[in-house]
Image 1 (cartoon, rainbow, N blue to C red):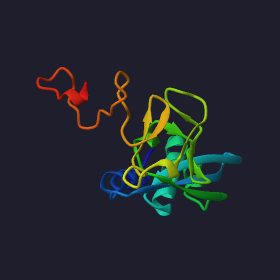
Image 2: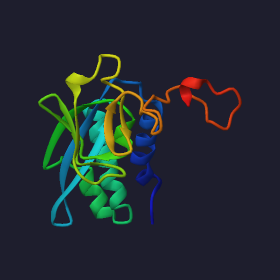
Image 3: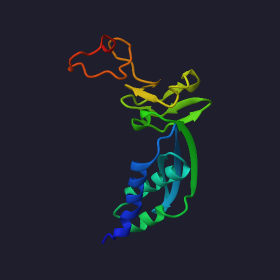
Length: 169
């Protein structure tokens, strides 16, 4: 039988997600716990190391939700943990295994593409370096260009609405 205390880590993680402050970079934690006799690898993203570790722990506990002894293993000290700082932007919602190396943001895959994607952050202006976007599988600094015109669609209403500015066509 599940006890109400089992839901406490989930509630705390959701609270942190909903009420975390806006940051200009994110931290990713890559964490290993010994679960079910072997290592299990999890990652979590957050505004700092503690937050990222919390989300990695949440991912571990969520994976083993119905196995109490495994969930308890996720609450112990990890076997290993490494952290990486990455710039902010909506790309992290659709890109996997992102990290920064030699001033390049490198992701294992960005949907819908499955191969490695990267962008040189030194090519981004200060205004856009923390607003990286996934544009149909390609990483860009700032808003995605329109497929038809090459112009950005930032701030443009849908074409079905009346009085759409010409810059949005």
